[in-house]
Length: 385
Ligand code: NDP
Ligand code: MG
Image (cartoon, rainbow, N blue to C red; front, side, top):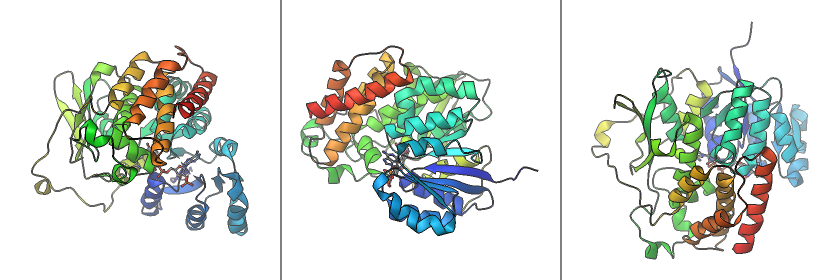
């Protein structure tokens, strides 16, 4: 008889999503078994996690940290590998049932493709993978019979609203956005903001890259593209609504006009648990939402003139091909530069728009075209800084 436990690989276990996923799993030990944990360079936390969860394998992509991790885990019989290629290889391990992609940025693309080709279902936090190569990923999922369970709170909300609606068409979706720390701010005020201000998100505690993306509205732009691929939607079916309380995580409108929404406190553990446990809802003791604590749920239009990234993402999605890949790579360089105080808050959008104009457009890109586009865009963006 097959064992009931789901065997999980967590790529990026030391990050915000990765550590919360381990919290979820620690509370549901009878349901999950950890097979693989990975980190980029945070070897101390990776070692602590490995000692606690006893995976079969850990990967540290920063090769210089290999010795330290291996010395710490060798006696426990945990295999330790290093480097990017190892990350892509371990997802193919036979015992894995589900791969949680909780690493940040373009680095998620290759291991996700390898996992899909090995027939592993994906719990997807790494939205950049779908932004860069949504078309390719969707085709591969069909070809290999693989499911993607969204972890992003908005997409988890949509996914939950769609359970039982397989035969009913979606008229449109409402993707909610908190508006970030600078909601209501104008260009002049934004021109001088510093990373310390941008890193203070009002509702969510997340990794640095996505926190900056939330402040610029690029996160919502990336999520629009993510939603297109996850739910097979056209641009005009995706509407962004600013909802500062982050209680309604998103909503689906059907062809009879009825709207289903999913609500809850802003806590990523719930969407993470739903993706890991799907199709079951697992009992937990997370704090419950109380309507009386939120007598005013409010909604506004996003300020697309001030926060240009949202429109840049819609433009990239409309053009298709390698344009979202260009958008993503330029954004990764822009955010990294902003975090090093090398460019201003508003210059991030200029840099992205500039790359979208200058990099060669490829209408039907292959995997190799995405790799080349990512590389060329990073070179150009670094030059333009
Ligand atoms: P973090 O920055 O907190 O964590 C990133 C993880 O990926 C860490 O384990 C990090 O290792 C690892 N990592 C970083 N760079 C690389 C690399 N080049 N190669 C391999 N591994 C790498 O990010 P988050 O957890 O905030 O976000 C992860 C993903 O989930 C992102 O795509 C984000 O958009 C998405 N997401 C996050 C949400 C959140 O609440 N945080 C909400 C919705 C989506 P190390 O610690 O060693 O650096
Ligand atoms: Mg989100």
